[in-house]
Image 1 (cartoon, rainbow over the protein chains, first blue to last red):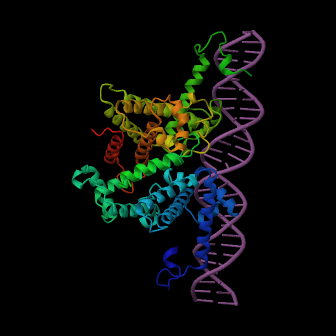
Image 2: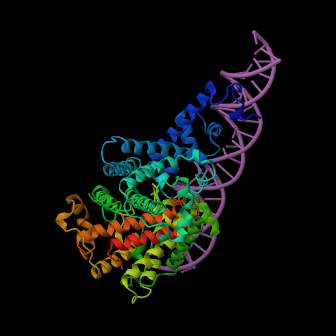
Image 3: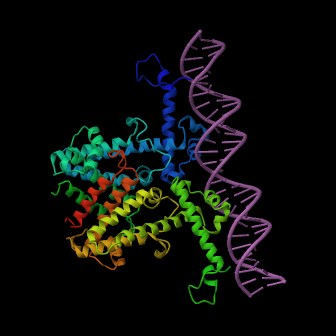
Length: 252
Length: 252
DNA sequence: TACTAGAGTTAACACTGTTCACGATGAACG
DNA sequence: CGTTCATCGTGAACAGTGTTAACTCTAGTA
């Protein structure tokens, strides 16, 4: 039994041109994920069914098991592609015009996040809703981080925040002012991001993430409908982003 | 075909003693929901299966259709009981000791919310995660509000907030300072709650809900694990609640 | 006591994820 | 060139899913 990675085209040093079969395989993999996404869109994760995907592609269900070990790993792969797409959308918004001031770019990126969530509610629900037991449970930690595309999403925000904070260093607690537990918990992450900001700013960053998540998720999940029946939370979102900007010291 | 509500015990004026059958029926209804919850706990909503519940109760699957029209309405009913339980837990925390100052009671209630979410992750996910397509979609609006127990949950927070704000009226935007769209959107809700606080305070209330939701949901759903791998967000939650208190003018 | 409304059962249908044994195809190698 | 073998895809099958229909039996009512 050969290892597909090591033994294909053994003469080429590394990252050789993919063989025809590999290209075909990769192509149907994306076809599978595209079909899975179509199903996700019109009925949530539980409508993403192996036979449904297979029918869309004109083949039978067991064939998909040549490409994914199980429905759950397929959903996990779908999550990765969605994370990538979302990260691309945010990057495009963030770096669209590097001449505009950072504060505005921060707001533009936040609005792009909200817009992506509203334009792709099912996808957003899969990525940011309650975790589905089998899917992605250990994808966060088990597989090598390079394979977890969720980190790209986080990096977009982190880079933006770091730039913003360095240009506008609003006061953050000094390390000794932090709860020792929190300081210890965040030490690993602080290390991982190369200490580009002090650990007190990491706490501020997490606080911003929590607030942004709350603003977008409550609207996208309908948890504001009790007060805003028409479901359009844009005006409230404006208000919330104003608060967030104030917290970042961007009170212009 | 008789209407079960109107024609049972027609001699009694209203809300007469339930007949034996009615009591038995109600009892098995709660048994069904208890079994459904057990399944929910150990595998998320998708493990809540009609046959699984029936087996737990020692009967067969079709029997459940005497009690619920479909699996989805069963899940909807489960949501209602969970909302009730959560509201009870928050009420107990909120009104545990009416002599303690409101600020502390607000914090205690917030911690009770977080604790309930962490102690009942699956239930929290069902209530506050991405909406499941079939279940509860119209339960929010279609059925009469008295049947939607989610409003009890909201009322606990609203009462607490209203008391708090009246005792501590931090400045809020005047109506004419609000985005007209937002003012219009919130008019109905403002009316519905009897205008117990000005509409600017309603915006503040929603902002608090968004932040509280963000703080609890990110932790309960694991969306903070990228920075806090051990998953214990208590220390960060302390920090976030401090911010929330500051926003409410409770900077003691 | 006779009747009937209701709870519960079995059988069945159309699905679901998944495994297995098989056939076809095409790329690689002697 | 011909052989070989990994790979892709199929059909059949199994256990499990939600749901409906027809049926039995029991308990409450007239």
